[in-house]
Length: 113
Length: 113
Image 1 (cartoon, helix red, strand yellow):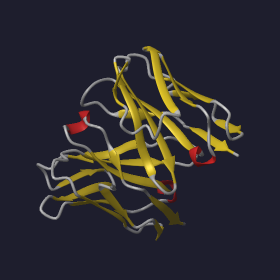
Image 2: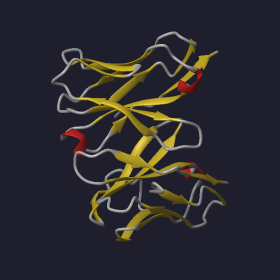
Image 3: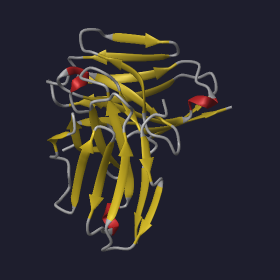
Image 4: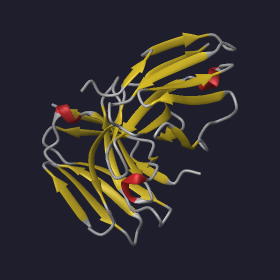
């Protein structure tokens, strides 16, 4: 299996622009997680989906952030408009089911100038 | 509110030495305590995990020690090797491994040859 796939790996954009991060979970996995990693705050859970349905989005920082999972093999995290403080590494992880290990993707390094 | 506190922030150990990383948690409802290993440019990967019904778990050179009354747990890496150089994260969740993970801020380990 190719593991969790994220794209792009690096994104540099200007403040105010829309940013879309993409994730393809491992085939057969039913849960998908979006995390943000920064030096100051560490690794934070933003949102997670079960069977394509958002279960907990309490970690989404504000309305500028939105996430979708239109089908079992694809999810997006969108930031509109982006701000410099959104600069971070964003990870997607997937899990087969309750009690199983979470597998992380390689991350997308976002820089907002 | 940071619910999992990890120390030290960075650690330098000589090859063959013992690396020790500590974590403390606040929420007594936590019942699953994993450690993740992250290499540069990669996502975190599960290393070893423990539940509070045991005080120690060992897998190869990696051992978790768990002190429920003190609400602390630690990772010990015996015979540390340069290949162990990475960032290590402790985490905790309630609801077993089904729950959402709360991560510590990480410890950057460097093992000198």
